[in-house]
Image (cartoon, rainbow, N blue to C red; front, side):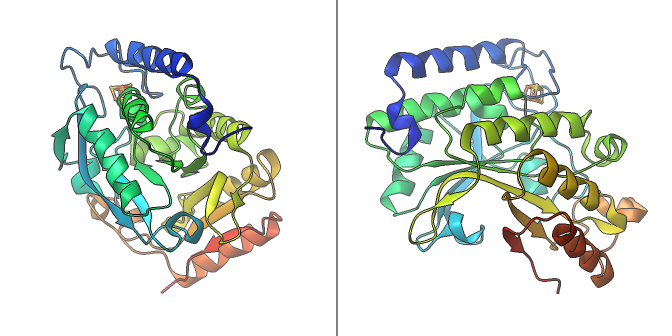
Amino acid sequence: MKKYPSYLNLSETELKQRIKQAYQNLQSCQLCPHHCGVNRIAGQRGICRSTEQVKISSSNPHFGEEPPISGIHGSGTIFFTNCTLRCVYCQNYPISQLGHGNLISISELSRIMLALQKQNCHNINLVTPTHFVPQILKAVEQARASGLQIPFVYNTSGYESAKILKLLDGIIDIYLPDAKYADDVIAEKYSLAENYCSVAKEALKEMYRQVGNLKMDKNGIAVSGLIIRHLVLPHNLSGTDRVLKWIAENISKETYISLMAQYFPAFRASKHSKLSRRINREEYNKAREYFEKCGLTNGWIQQHS
Ligand code: SF4
């Protein structure tokens, strides 16, 4: 009988093979669509500014995620330091852009996973994990051998290589990506994300292929599936109409969407005139209309305050 979470079904040989393949992407780094080609094992850094060593800013039960992720006992978040994107408005910029955090070993990372399980968290929520996939897989191997049995949430900007995502097939049960933009020029300008749209579309399709629509248990806790976050930006820089239409037509109308109104001009946003204010009520009402017009019905629509 198939076990849950999915990674309990993976043979030791298969898991070792995935780890090996993932580490091969670190020597001339190809872990994300930037394809920097730097040797992170030798200490070189690419756009994400990370070497081989894992750096995290915090780990704790988190209650502010979407209800099926946080549940009653919290989501066991591990915030990885640095990011493959350079969003000028990042709300977590001390961690993602300024590099705040502590270096830890892989054994420590696996112990953190087990500690979050001990605190009754519903899942291990890997926040901004993309640039540390090989190390995470190694930690999963160690944690699994020591009794880890809660699912993983892969919480990402959506700027993912489909090839790397395939290494996570059967390991990640819940994908929580952003769909940030509908326009590559805007994505490059504000997030330094070349070809964001085509890259994120392929990534979302791969995630959906692996886990499908969101499934919850009788208590409303996420068991598996895809939840897509979309942060509405001022002047519709996020292309909300096109992003939601694409999801409805190419992923599924059943997709759970987390529509977010929480944008505020953090980090360097005030230097960009179009990003220097919060979204207004009219902009958010339009975003809500797009959501309904596309035939999407599942998810959460944040209140505009
Ligand atoms: S993970 Fe970092 S070094 Fe590797 S390709 Fe992406 S940005 Fe470059």
